[in-house]
Amino acid sequence: MKSRVILFFLAFLVWMGLTWPPDWQHFAIGILVASFVSFMTGDMFVQRPHVLKNPKRYLWFLYYLPIFIWECFKANIDVAWRVGHPDVPINPGIVKVKTILTSDTGLTFLANSITLTPGTLSVDINQEKGFLYVHWINVKDKDIERATRLIVHRFEKILSRIFE
Amino acid sequence: MKARDRGKKNPQILRKNKRRSISRQTIVAPEYRRLRWLMGTITILGITAVVIFYPLPSLIRWQSSFLMRCFFIVLLCGAFCLYRILRGPSAPDRIVAIDILGILIVGFCAILGIPTGRTWYIDIGIAWALQSFIGTIALAKYIEGRNFDE
Amino acid sequence: MNNIMGMIFIVVGLVFDFFGCLGLVRLPDVYNRLQASTKCVTFGTCSILFGAFLMLGITAAGIKTLFCIIFLVLTAPVSAHALARGAHISGVKLWKKSVVDRYKEDKRSNQ
Image (cartoon, rainbow over all chains, first blue to last red; front, side, top):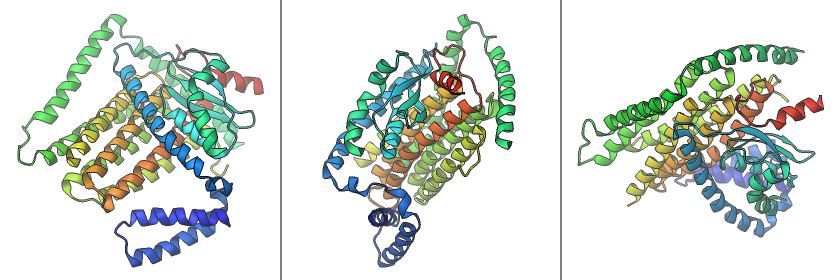
């Protein structure tokens, strides 16, 4: 029930954003559509509603955003340099890293932020053992521990505070 | 049973194509690589300069005319994607290029909406992003050799 | 002022788009192409959309560009991940000079 209410408010917010100048007709139809959507797909979307109550998590998320955007910008400069260089200085390979995150949302965000940061692309996840297979454009280390320290540790601490 | 068959058939085709592409690449001697890079850079910079500075932008409404010229750079990126679609050695290459083309078109629609004053182009961009995401996921599942309902 | 800022964002986005598509042509193998193009083109398109938001202001179209940015950032890495996984399972090999392939080793040891 709680997850349905949360989904209802989210869907309603998105609807009001898409039909921006606020209006009574949009408002009424938005309530109808959002209640229908939350009735149909409510139990799939939010599995642990108690996570959303804690205000600390939102603050950590706000702290995570600028770090993520800065890393993303550095990644783009790095890839643009590699592509524009005449010799294409790449040294690719698929390495394996460990993670301590277990929840679905946390793993999804970790994989997405790995994909959007310098030279790394997540290929597959093994959720039971906590392994991630990462394609690295410039392999600095083949060892699991050191690769984990280089790739995952930037985000893992913050993400474990947000989603666990 | 079907999925297994597909998984068996695919690698042979892909491997054949890949061998051909490698033999094509090794024809170029390494000494000429820098020269080729220089020529390519000059060509691309020349094309961009011609697109932006000829004919000279009018000074009165320079903002909209500048944005109009920005389209041609997006079209150049689209031409690169089309090259990869035509000559990609394997099926995943082509799917990657199609995915990237979809994201490019979203940006194209956003630029197109501003100087023409028709802001519904951005609605087209949102719809295109949704469709291309679903299409890419479906194609990825297809080359993986699985059913869609898994 | 907002117009000039929006133009700067649009030009930065165009440069990154261009480098991403150049990577699609120059790099040697599916996974490398996927890396360059996904990162650069996603960031470039988000930058273009943010520039469009600055130029349009808070109007109907401006808010739609913000929703488009959120949607792209959430979905582009997911599709890249699905494509990389599908390509590896369907048997596309890595580039011949690549260093290590743990995924293949683990798949072999499981079978």
